[in-house]
Image 1 (cartoon, rainbow, N blue to C red):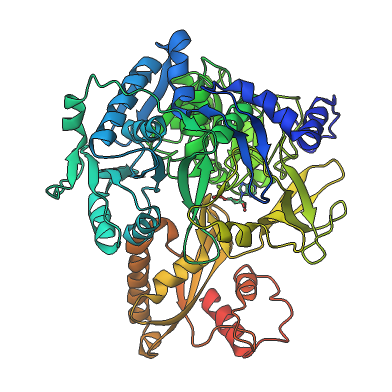
Image 2 (image 1 turned 120 degrees about the horizontal axis):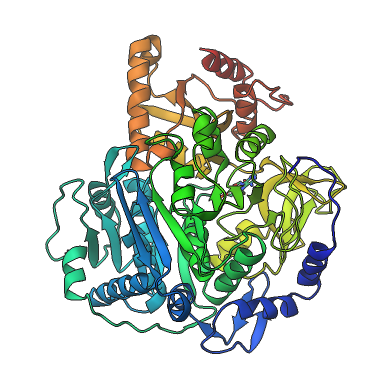
Length: 639
Ligand code: AMP
């Protein structure tokens, strides 16, 4: 495969794509045949109340049924969930039959603890099989799961508990990262303490990694209930296609995370279609996505997508370089993985390791490596392509869409990727680059905002959980009077129709593929008693793509006069961020300044701060209130 090769189309992609835009109802009615329906739908799409779109109205189905039960006839003894942990040195494969059993037991546990259809279940867990059982169990009985990434700490968790109002929380004593035990239970207890909403029950998986105190009457033990309910039969609850399957929180421009809400039927069809046309899914083979169930990739392409496609899914607890940087390739070899999905950051980490480890294993089963979540720079793409000698396929999407917006779709046509570009629009997504002010389509190679014409295809968010107004205001109001979905990413489209993503238009940053709102980090830093004001920006980083950089004004200036005191305070502030949001949100540095660059109307000039940090020109400074502020940022960054 060569990069930047002029692509000659056979027309198959273009035909399918155009049909999906011209005749979405016909196109999506056909894709709906990829899943099993309990009751057929009456109407493919109801878009009578834009920008809301209801897919497969009148139809009844179930995500768990499609992921597990329907494979029992043909592939009961095939690997379904392949748990590999380099953290606790364990491997265990569950066949579809075993997965079916475990999911029924987990569903019976939830029912015993009072969970009913429509209730929320918050899942705060490491990458252990019980996490997947809990998700599938919720889907089975029509409970709405809300998985919170295990790297988030008590403040983030508490705000999600208050928003989702779960009946039950499923958790574990601890996770483990790079061999270090991370206790979850104290963070969970603190979060419940902080939250106004109290869950009735907490279901605890005790891995024996970190001793914890049980709260009498509230905490239940997974293993004990498992023994009691080992033969439980829990039939599938048939759900309306438009019922809610899950909520997944994602960062935005305010401090309050948004609950991305998804349906049942549309999501199932979108995943099935993407497994076939985008991700080269093949029943009977194994899929390995290196993400975490706390992120959207974990929902779509660790749990639901591969299982729905009849594939085994590798459920990996560990980092890419432990015990050594060959671990992923060893997993590919040992489990005959056919498709892999990861993030550019992880590849950049591998790039710094012993290269011979890439050649040590037999990778003949691997068809392609998909990468997503952040920009994939050309150098990294070329490096991994040369090293693996396999197609490297970038794909661009968001928590909100649930599946790719841009990608070369090799399940349809053998298109060549262009390194640096995540490809062309995926079927169903009417993607455009629009001028920020006129809302008119930009010319070829002209920079604008990547936007999607409604209705969004199946699988995308239905709304913001509990807040329809926020959904419309946040996503559909950038190009008024037209109602178009904004991705909040800058982009261009080249003469061959390939898109290039040029960064966010808002205050969201992307650290090692993790999406964070700078406002959330600012709020956390501001809660430190010594801090008067703070600005956080995302700064380009070779390894992580971006890192958060903080500039704080202190309430008293004495700390700034002593480098030792300043260092100690910086560490103390980082601890606050760690304990409230989690280490993922910790800024690379907290610099102390006397003044922050603002406009005369008091707006923080974040872009200018960012430009200085990246060694660029800060731009037009005629509106700045105090030019000395920029000098302070400059000297803080240099020192
Ligand atoms: P998340 O919702 O966490 O998946 O973050 C979505 C954001 O990550 C997008 O809006 C982009 O800013 C960025 N992103 C995701 N995939 C890509 C990609 N392949 N290339 C460039 N940016 C990406």
